[in-house]
Amino acid sequence: MSVSAQPLTPVDPAGPIAFQEAVAGLQTAVLRREIEIGTLPAPGRLAPWSHAMSATIPAPDGEDEIASGRLILLHDPDGVDAWGGTLRIVVFATSEVDPEIAVDPLLPEVAWSWLVEALAETGADYSALGGTVTATSSTRFGDISGPHRVDDLELRASWTPDPRTGLHLQAFGNLLAAAAGLPPEGVTTIGRIGPPNVR
Image 1 (cartoon, helix red, strand yellow):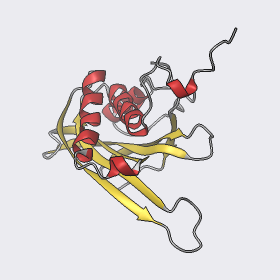
Image 2 (cartoon, helix red, strand yellow):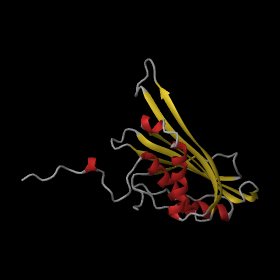
Image 3 (cartoon, helix red, strand yellow):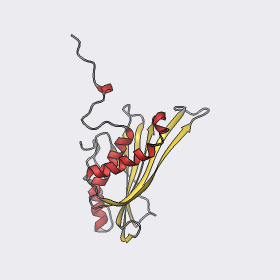
Image 4 (cartoon, helix red, strand yellow):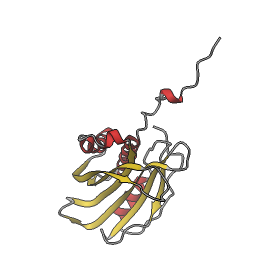
């Protein structure tokens, strides 16, 4: 994998040492170059300490996004019984899907497998994983710009990570890449191969 073209902005968080180390660990994530990472205002009600990040994959024309999401790292020094630890990762991912894929009854299971496989592939250890997958369709009427119908896939999940938070951000990036339909790195789709040399 290649390092993201837009590396993470260094942060100097306040809070307990365990939280500072967890946030610093995010900086070690190795992401595909298509993924753009930024920081977001962290929610203040989910845990005593939190850090939020955005992730987007722009369309080839650069005018839209084909997948986007956010990752929130939570820390409660006292631990939370439901977490089974002091750290928790919460993610949200969304992408547009083709209409024929949107009606596939297996889509939720397939999308959930993207997350589970991404965590496994990076070697990120976790526990207490749970979440939801939702497929929605929106139809535009009247004087509203954009396509007549849009089908979206949304995944919300949370889990208790091991201290190697960079691997968990990397897994989240891989989930977004799968949702966006990106080919494996190093593979060129036929549509991107130039015309053959004619003699």
